[in-house]
Image (cartoon, rainbow, N blue to C red; front, side, top):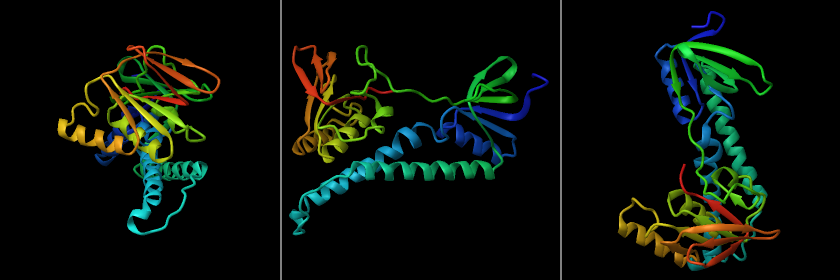
Length: 270
């Protein structure tokens, strides 16, 4: 161990669900715990995944319910979406949960360091803070819980019109035409959300069915349900590239077909 390093029983690199859960368990067991996170505690799920996605999904569900309320004898009228209000609510929920998690970690006496942790020899961890300041940590036990990043496709580098799940939640308005590459759980959730928010949605899936790994009957049921709602789904297709223009983006398929949209969401796993 480095003599000048801060000594702990347990150091965790990563403050997402794996990291903060380990920190809380360690603290409950009486360990002196330090956790390093270079963004916001809570990780992808809380800040760029499950939680914001479910808020948008709920907004979309409310919009669809009002739009279809006439079926129940309720005159709902035209639906007007204030996307700014919706995203403000989304970030308010996220901020509240992040604050609550921070309070919980503090109450358990977990030391949280803001910065990037690098594992060194003899279980030492070097933490480089946002201002460049360096802190050395050492512990008998180190847990690496650094998480993952969205996968991308060659030729589909992130831009204003090419998005991954990390960038979707930064949108300032609902694109008129959304192309979702990937028919897994995350891609289908985005497809459903943006359809109900008023976008024209196309899903491109390379495999023979959407939601691969799910029972075939369930996949077919979801497929039919989405198409009834106006979502176009192409299975067994592969993308060949894209051309981004000033006002749109064109996705080229290996079959020679092209699909034009305003935004592409690349959802091919992590």
